[in-house]
Amino acid sequence: MSINKRFTRVLVACGVLMITAAGVSQAAQWSAPLKNGGTVTVDPDTNRATLRKDGVETQLWDGVHQLEDGSTLTIRSGTAVPNQDILRARELPKKPRPPEVDHWTGTPIVGYSPCEKLVRRVCGTDLACNSASACDPARQLLEMEQKERAANASPNYMTPASGQCKQAEQDRGFFVSCPAAGNKRAR
Image 1 (cartoon, rainbow, N blue to C red):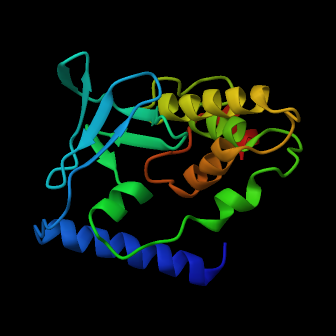
Image 2 (image 1 turned 90 degrees about the horizontal axis):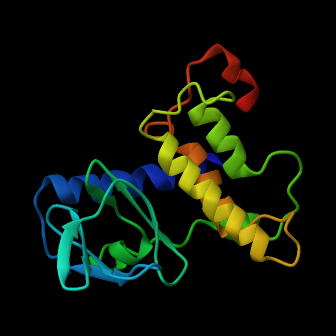
């Protein structure tokens, strides 16, 4: 990734943090239907995500959730990680979809897929870090990638979930590498 792309991401992330920290809440509430039913809503002030299904509202559990439109929403420690749609709803400056997601889709997979690499790095090659907090979200991304690949006429090609795993590789703060000695091959 180029320095300019990294710098832009850092600037956008700092901007989001500054607005959140300052308590500026001109944001609109965001909601979207989940793929498996129900509607998720994210509070603009707290980023808390709730699920309304069959008339019952509950807090959305930590992990990666697939939305009806095929995109995903990540919940960490009970709060939503703002995605493109949430940012647009909050009227923040538009940030284009990361080009690497589109760039990788349709590219042949050689060796381990991006999601397989992510799971190996985070959970350990022998699952030594299977209980790590990021292991379950990494496995969820792998499961989505496998479903997308299985539904594709050419299953050995990158999918949108593969691109999301490429992005997750950059988030070493959440997707922490397994410190187990047998994990060196996962990089």
